[in-house]
Amino acid sequence: MRVARVALIRLHGRLVGATGHPRNPRPPWTLAYLEALLLRDGRYGVRFHDQLTHPLPGARLAAWLGRWAPQVVVLQVTTLDLDALAEATAVIAALPERPVVLAVGQALALGTLPGVDLCLPGEAEERALGVIADLDAGRPVAPAGDGPALVEHPSRLPPPSWDRARLAAYPMHYPLRLAARARWGHLLTGRGCPGGCLFCSPVTRESYGTRLRLREPGEILAEVRALAALGVNVLSLDDDDFTASREHVLAFCEGLAGAAPGMRWICHARLDDLDASLMERMAAAGCVLLRFGVEAAAPRVLRILHKTQREDWEDLAKEVFHRARALGMATTALVLLGNPDETLEEAQRSIALARALQPDMVQFHYFTPYPGSPAFTRWREHIPPAAVPSLYHYRAPPVNLSRMSDEELAAIHGAAYRRVLLRPAFALAHLRTYAPFYRHNPGVLLDLLPQRSAR
Image (cartoon, one colour):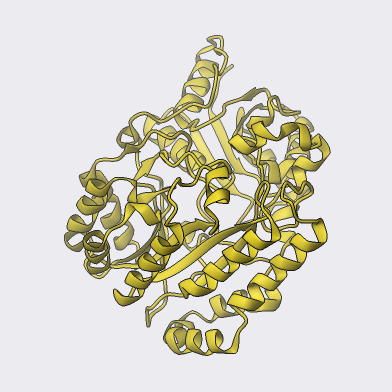
């Protein structure tokens, strides 16, 4: 077959929007890099559509595809999007000339997907380009192979094709210590996370594998300059663990002032990656927010989660959060409730720790054994196939692996937000700190109001 046109679509299921929780939409990185690869190749027309930011219901999706008439459609899909997958493949099957359908994304952990011709698991952008070239040349397409694909050399990928309108579709809902309009940009500086946590899945990650694969500092800074030229003044570093390599962090910090003076940035970090001197360097280089997976307080639960073997995790967390406050960096604490074999007392200890940390923001997630995570493999016999599409860390889990009853787990989850975020003292201190930001970014405040959040 001759391939002249390719459509790239990130699907978006109804489950995500049903919680009312303010989303922090990140770009669909596999599709963004595949688009860049196709444009660099130059042999194919390519159009990209993100259903998360710009929904296209069935009839409108059919019209969009009908006008473009692609020979290949690449769908990025997670297990949260299985309803959208069924709708999209039905639309595609009804086209006058049915294109070849490729699928990428976390949902491929379930195996073959209905309506899909070829599943490409993992970091599939390079593999997808090869498949499209094979189809275009009439060559047989080789099987995907065992296990998820990995991008071994991230610096060989061209940068995504950003413009102001596309960047504006991915704002983050984090208040910042910034008295200006936040214009967000997104950046991946590497792939892989060496943590190996039990719950980790590509639903909550941006890459695959535990082996760190980092981009060259000069290439990263060139992309930062290009984003700054588009008006970006805050960068979201979307790496699964940006601080996993001290040398990588230092190189970024040292080059950022020359590449984009005054640029602010946020990142995901591990408590045990940081020390005083590294945090000082990050703050001086414009880091304004650190997101930490605190997960739990009890050492026994942390060991079950494969998070850490440390007995002093609570003390370490308090030390790092205190140091961040002293340096003027905001913090977000991510805490899991309903962990495997977790008792009510251990969950309460985690909530107490979250309050003691005095974070700027906190998110209490339900432990969720997503497909593709070690937890799903370990407890698969306890997870009915019918429950998989409803597995979502913002919703009460259909499968409770803790020692708490379903009622106790739901109650303690709701109480967690009341004990930490909904205290008058917290609200007043938060408004004093972030009033200048909210004056310039009122939509963020509206999205963070308690009645709009999941409980």
